[in-house]
Length: 329
Length: 187
Image 1 (tube, rainbow over the protein chains, first blue to last red):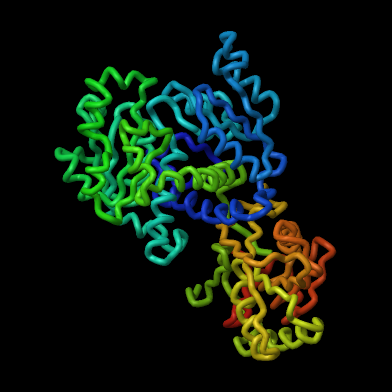
Image 2 (image 1 turned 90 degrees about the horizontal axis):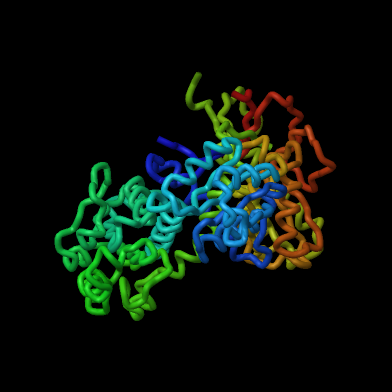
């Protein structure tokens, strides 16, 4: 069990303790203030170099990570894979070695293969590796920013702050995750984060889009989707990943929407206080109705906003952190 | 070891065994009152003064100073809190301190900022706070108010208002809060 990510890597949220997750969320609270200032920059990682390697396309995660690194004053080396030697057939190991030879402190990596981030952390053990999504495995910062956002919104509703609340707000919180769980790294990281913090997680989706085995997953599968919607405090939707061949797992997109899309009619089943989330990019009209996505229950934009402070916390703790005691002056 | 004598520096820092109490709560209260009067004396008007407490040890002292200034001059001085964790030059030596929140709602340009902290030691926290403050505007002046000055400066920094000068040895640790000041050994 990982009890703190200080000085380490962030590869997965499986086997990460509640304390370690709270440490990231609490640190992120401090960075929210930095992001609201006129001068949105602190010198915490001055002179450190963060390489951003996205072997798979991404808008928000890449921009969010690079913005986070820059706001900590780190230098960012950004590899555009499409115009790099990867296209000439260079292996992952050689690409990493080449970048490492330039002198880097951390790698933020997205890759289409599950386990790629772990593999890289073995190639370059002296470099901090932050997984920005590996295949169908994990997307840890998404799990962190989703729980951060839920805590922030619930704390505000109760007139307190996330920092004061700790993990208390997650005790018994009912979380429903809907859609293509099978192919979703977001679902895997979200489930691990919510469960570690004490929430109750249920999943819903067509049988073909659920994992083949749920052994070791801290979740239950719901039988009746409509009933589960009335039960939930938080509804986390997932993107139907057409690029991963999801299309062949369902008879048709219309069929999926009819059974598991969050339509206007289904939104009425939700508690008025329930929160609707989506990691983006959304397929409007497929897993979520456009009007639902723009309704006041949806906190999708806040998820994007919070990506920066949460990723600042992840970079800061892994790169600048050591695990010994503190001193006073 | 008596657990009542086990004290912790703010912000989850080091724990140490308090050998003796150097100042009582009354001594601290008197020191604060004197410093508040000195602040009024030094600054012609409090209109442009902003009190900034350094997280987390300086916070209770800053709050008290604001109350005292209200009693003395009948004016409400704005207050902010500053956490300098992300501005430290010793991140590689120290672990990341558990950070506390920065709350500064006023533009500091043209203001006289009075930094308030519990203990002044190497001066590195204060140096970091200068960098941090410059991100919130360009103050007209910065003054420094500390409850305890324990010596051992590593930078050319001098306090303007001091509650008590307490020469210490570097192996000792000091804890100061509104209930008193203690000295002990680092664990």
